[in-house]
Length: 187
Ligand code: DGI
Ligand code: FE
Ligand code: FE
Ligand code: FE
Image (cartoon, rainbow, N blue to C red; front, side):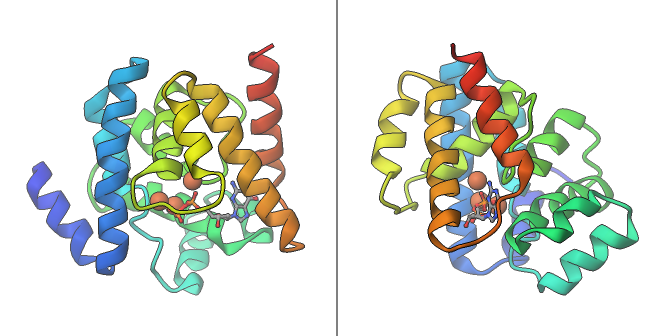
């Protein structure tokens, strides 16, 4: 499948709003890749596929994670975490993406992970700050993204953790570990 066909397939699998978000993340991920020295072709591909499973019924996402022995630990936490693992699986099996860097960037775009690659960071941050995003801290994060990938990402995870706290929700431990690691690296 070439890029155009892949774009058509992804577009057909989601509502209009999610597709517009996807286009925003692709554009932003490529910009950030150029700014911070990641591979823009990989950033574009990971961004295109990052939310492929986002609008699937959650039971289908959970089933896929169980059936294919993906990260079982996310199943004990918020269902918003599931689509990233399901998406990486679909990228590999349905679309034949073999590049582990691209698959990891999809897989960890929501939770983060302790040793985030440059590509992981670019895709995760692009997801936070694409132009369609509106949440209280987004402009601060956009400003930070001009100067520091890590500082912007920390602010992103801070906003997510703060949001989860305000809702009385549990936090996936890996997200806390990710934030701690980014802070540690920045010392
Ligand atoms: O899929 P998107 O909406 O574009 O963005 P995303 O994949 O980054 O998902 C973000 C949502 O995930 C956000 O509403 C918070 C929710 N979430 C729930 N539990 C956790 C979590 N996000 C993180 N990083 N860690 C959690 O433990
Ligand atoms: Fe997502
Ligand atoms: Fe995200
Ligand atoms: Fe997204």
